[in-house]
Length: 330
Image 1 (cartoon, rainbow, N blue to C red):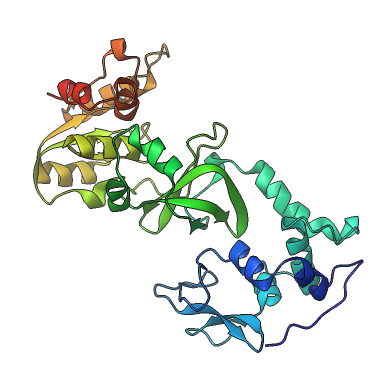
Image 2: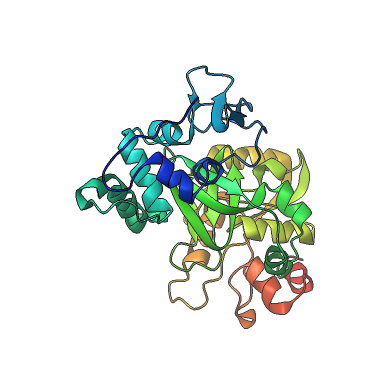
């Protein structure tokens, strides 16, 4: 498939763009699962449960080829055009804007990219719903990752077993977001919770459902004790300490009777270990823990105020060991 040079306003031409960046750069930026030429991956343009797509050299250019759908064969520009359902010229504008090429000075021609910029500026985790599509680009594990998770005694092996992986950027309904600091994708039933620990403004972004129970897939069929806690990070800390654990998607969520009934058939004892929001008068974590314990007859375990730690991972980080956590859980 040949890439034709088509004119638009100013210097916004395909040949000018490819004089500044490569086709490979464009595919790497916009295609979530593309990592290597010739390597197959699942389509990002349709429902696809198996790797059927490959980006391959073709007639001296690169071609996005879907072997499961003969209509999906695109060069880097037509790929953007199809992905964003826009005109060819708008596809060039998107590339120009995202790569800061400065090729278009036509302000009226920036409507499409301005819409994307507005989406990014207004985006907030609380507005993300389960029908929103989140995709991510994995990156290699780094020393910074090891340093961060070592504070909680969580190893790379444990992270992998809980479907946690480091990412370089992610897409929300096709809009690309670069990760400014270490960021991770937690996977739940083909949905994601994006965790950026050093981003106080947007630490969490998620399209998970309330029924997606964190740590559920890692539970044994039968066990003595189960601890319901606040987050997947806490679940992993408890796992390292030797306890089976799960977390709901929100600590302010009452567990459904169906879930509790199933868990009671699998575990002899179920305890609650929610946040101790000692710095808040209302202490919402313990208020919700009391409600759940009253409803289901569970035991409430609270991290003592003297530790000034609200949850298991915070405690482990603060004291530098697992011993205090184990003592609290005795």
